[in-house]
Image (cartoon, rainbow, N blue to C red; front, top):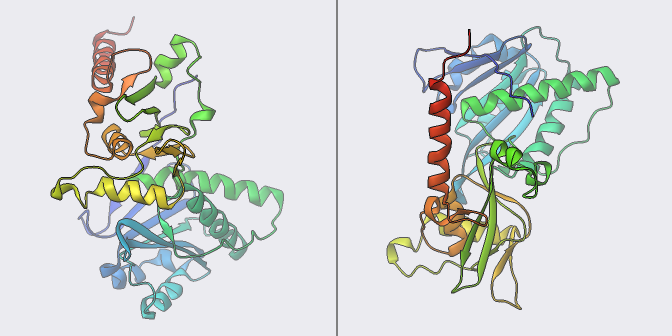
Length: 321
């Protein structure tokens, strides 16, 4: 496996503050991103970028679930005009931040924008990192093969640059099945990361996970308790309890009536080992200690310390001259 190639991203704080308008660009990419809070919409609409053809994102906290983000994806050949219309509506009360994606060379046409809109809605729906306000994605507009290829490259850059701005709606959950399996060589496992396991003899829980692309991914088939079992009042409305219930409601975890336990029906990405173990055990837990490399007693914390030591040792070795 080859090492990833670095990319240069240029961020510009328009007003000299991180809470205001921000522009973002990638070297050798024609795309241009402008993002900022809805409270700055007058300044936003005064920018020349919003007079172009492009796609836009309206997002904010979901009124029905403050722990989740609601997202609307649109397109227009006059993005600024469309944003004004949305601002006059009463429907999008969740809208707190705006993101507009256009092209510096202004070569994005209406057809290109509609293609981007449809694809981005599909990607966001699959990623499940936000509640979509769009409903179903509109059909993709037929375009020449070369144009479709150009727009797919454009989408790749969008998915690369937006997380830098804290916008992760299009970052799909990693797919462990596409990575090396536990039976792969030790060298491959060292590079890609090991498989971790979490067991609890009293409840019969057995779960497996991998750390992939900055996510801690619990693998399909892992077992968990079917409900939050902590009796402490302080934990009654714990965010992990809400997360567990959400995964159950979405069908990503389903109760097995024959065993009384719940089973992951698909790979699920978590923000940390502790978030994963809390959902699995039904109570707060230090996942850094609970998760252990499969077949060993080495926990996640010890494994991570080993990686830090290896990295430090490698950096201390001077390159040969």
